[in-house]
Amino acid sequence: MAVQRLDRGDLWKNKARVLQLQLRQRFRVAVDRHRPSVLADRYFSSSVQRWLRRFRDFRRDSLPSSSSFYRKKVSKDFDVEVDSAIFRMLQAVAVPLIGNVCHVFMNGLNRVQVYGLEKLHDALLNRPKNKPLITVSNHVASVDDPFVIASLLPPRVLLDAQNLRWTLCASDRCFSNPVTSAFFRSVKVLPVSRGDGIYQMGMDMAISKLNSGGWVHIFPEGSRSRDGGKTVRSSKRGVGRLVLDADSTPIVLPFVHTGMQDVMPIGANFPRIGKTVTVLIGDPIIFDDLLNSEEATEASRGKLYDAVASRIGHQLQNLKVKVDKLALEQSIRLENHNKDGAERAANILHQVDLDPFGLGSHEYIRYESLVEETQTKQNDMSPEEATADVYTRMGYSCEGGIGSRIRSYMDPTELMGFAARGLLMNCRSKEKYSDTSDIRPLKTWKQYLEANMLKQWNTC
Image (cartoon, rainbow, N blue to C red; front, top):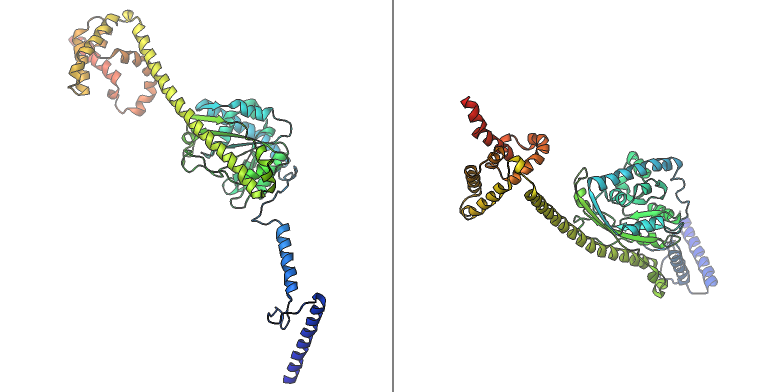
């Protein structure tokens, strides 16, 4: 047995020597005897290793990997199977319905102030045929799309589901189960997976829509604002791919809004009403100087994506500063308007002929002079004592009919407002007041009845 093992060992050595001679004759180089190979007693020459290294470099450079960037062309019919006839029918019904409901909610139950609306309408309705459109905006609330988009478009445009926007949403948020997946697909939402990069299927589907001349809306920040919409974060690289990898360079229209944080606060389950949203639409972003420069021809694809995304983010940040300034000016203007309205109401009250009601203008003048006389006294008294003192003095000084007696217990501006407030008091008094004695106008009537009518009733 030992002799057989030695024979087998010599046989393998002879085979290794033969292979060594063949390699030496093939590559005409000496074999390195000091580096063992994977196979026993055999050696690889430095030339073989050099050729293997060249082959690996060629494979790495020619084939795209997860860490390299390249232009991935997408055909127009990329998602023809996904975009079936059933979903097109659902989109034709769901998109106009939900769009018009959101339009009524934003413009009817809230207030939307838009600056530069003609820029969006011109880009949407008057752009060349098959010219793609990308709209970019900041992301404040979970209902930015469709609420803000619907508020900017007239109802007749919202009825055309085919030409309305496509948008992107995270698959773990909008496509977590079959029901939500079917709903969001029926309202023209495309799924994207967080962390899968810019060459995933959802991005390819968005580029396919652009290649067909469609409209895609995207939030370049990638997610909602973490500070309530106070700032705009930098844009992600994915928006750069949408711009550069489309067959024709799309129109990129930016707009920024503020106020949606009040309509849909963080943690709220339902949107609020009675809020004001301000939207500022900017000019289309131009990339010709960036794409046609000499540096662009030599730059890598990843740097071009970053340059496009950086320009979009910079434009959104500039618009954010402007829209915040416009919203502040608008709030100040509205506050001044309310003050002017109160002053006009007071002037109208001065001009009303109160004689037929027993509230003559001479009595009102006497009331004002009485208040002026007691101003110095009120500085040393509490507000309750000061008000009671005015009403008491009026009670002894005013004479006349029933109106004058009521005036002795009530400020004339309160008397005029009492009639208007009475329309709403019946439905709100049960909710806001547990006791009707808390309502000041009712206390006035009660004091008047106790002081006059009840006394006459008791004496009868």
